Amino acid sequence: MISKMPKWIGDWLEGSFGPRLTVLDTDYITPAIKNIRFQGDISKMDFLIGSASVIRVSDTEYRNYTPTYYDIKKGVFEIIFHIHGNGIGSKYIDSLKVGDELYISSPRGRKEYDPNVKQYFIFGDETSLGLACSFLPVLKQNGHQFQFYFELDEGNKNAPQLLGLENYTVFPKNGSFRNEKWISDLPLFNTDEWNTAKFILAGNVKSVQTFRKVLKNSTTGKILAQGYWLEGKKGL
Ligand SMILES: Cc1cc2nc3c(=O)[nH]c(=O)nc-3n(C[C@H](O)[C@H](O)[C@H](O)COP(=O)(O)OP(=O)(O)OC[C@H]3O[C@@H](n4cnc5c(N)ncnc54)[C@H](O)[C@@H]3O)c2cc1C
Image (cartoon, rainbow, N blue to C red):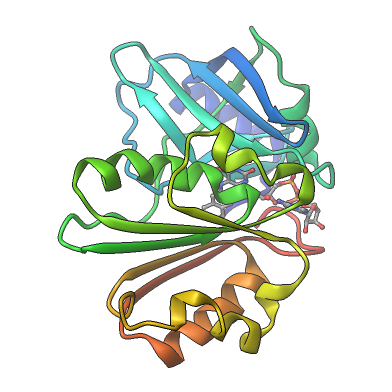
């Protein structure tokens, strides 16, 4: 995915394809998790569950974020941001306030939700809370069995509860999800119950890769894995 382009191309694309969105409301769920509600003409946007929009975070830099709640009629949608403080995107998002305007692309990505799958297991970190929130209503409405696992910094451990998520387990972000043996001892693998679930893995690239490896060796379920960020790498 493109994370950088010359300013003049960005300006031209934005001018041609807009739309610019306005910040309608901001809310810090924790000091490091910010929910923003945007407003604008979103009538042509396609909010597929699990898809991501590109936000222009400087003249030349672009970053991916996952829309959660949306209402086409009212022209509003929300995104949950991890304010980690290490990058230009995080700092830009932290600075956004009511009335600011910015470029957000139409969401795009693969189809992650399949109504015919009975069980869903979703793993991630702060960057994946939005993914979980976009899945929750449809998982409940269509009677799926589901489970969320999150690895979170201490200060964010209450975020799933504050966001109204259900059926979740929070783990400290201490490197455990980089340990194959530790992952294979998780309760998830003590029973055959989740053997044919759909596994959606997001968040830190190393955690995603390790979890995926264990799942490949121990389940027959379908695995969708997409790392959202990697230590030392800009604009994944
Ligand atoms: C499909 C997709 C959907 C995504 N959805 C969301 C979303 O809904 N909400 C969200 O917050 N993020 C989401 N992300 C992740 C987000 O795009 C990255 O975290 C991105 O790197 C942030 O850009 P930045 O400019 O802040 O940091 P960058 O300039 O990209 O990176 C600078 C430094 O910060 C570090 N860094 C980047 N992200 C984190 C992090 N989360 N925690 C700690 N250090 C970090 C990098 O490793 C690097 O060392 C998504 C990513 C993808 C690919």
